[in-house]
Image 1 (cartoon, rainbow, N blue to C red):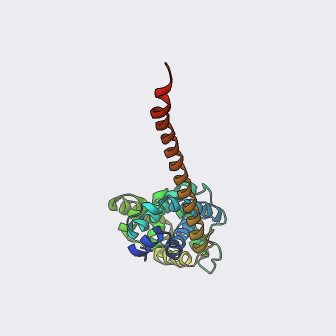
Image 2: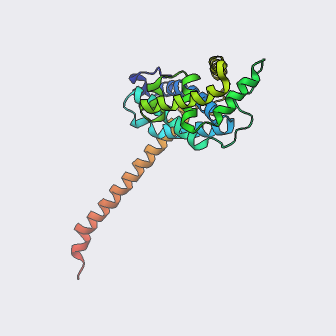
Image 3: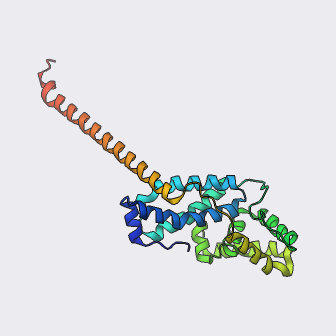
Length: 235
């Protein structure tokens, strides 16, 4: 997995430690952005995925019980948001930008064929050949069984291999190289995100406290009315 945080790091982040929160997002977001960019193919769609991911993770932080659970959450919700934001037709494909050389035509054909795969086949193809995750990690990200992952991968490989032939291994290696060097542009850097998150959490806590105080005042006033005023009213 891309995750290197410990449970102690997570506990500190939940306790509003800005440095621990920064480490949390610095560990997760670059890989999430790279996955989203490869799967969506466009910067605009990837920005939408990252914005959704940061908003959801900010609300989810207090619910995570372990660093491993948080890591699985980031993996899966990246895929969910990719499914919601991937455009039907990809132009100026991120996996083709800056790529050249004598094999560019064959590589371009591989990327074009990959874009035409059904979503789950495309996901497992990228996660296996580019991200280099094993079956178990792909299953966690895609929220399906190991057998389903294996079946999707078999179908994806069969379709791509029918076009690339004996060059399949070389072209998937090229995909891996392009993937690992994709330029990233995190919409919010981890330090800014950590600051924004904790300001939002403080605001929500103040709002909740104000709400409970208002409820307590209203209940107290109602009880006082029932005990002190109501008995004096002539019916």
